[in-house]
Length: 91
Image (cartoon, rainbow, N blue to C red):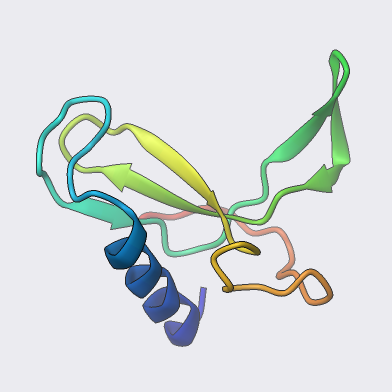
């Protein structure tokens, strides 16, 4: 994720997500993974590795609970220009 995408993600999370973790209920800092993730989609009972959902991952620093949010619906990517798949890293 570049700086403008990260800033847009931070602004979106601040406007839409409660600052507490839904798993541990703590107000521990939530950390944005510094790269977009592309989880594969399921088709029936099988994984379709050709179809992905560009996502921003948010991690609880207390319990490690991970949540994925659509980069498309957050306005970080457009459907016509998705970023290529990349390895997720914590930032």
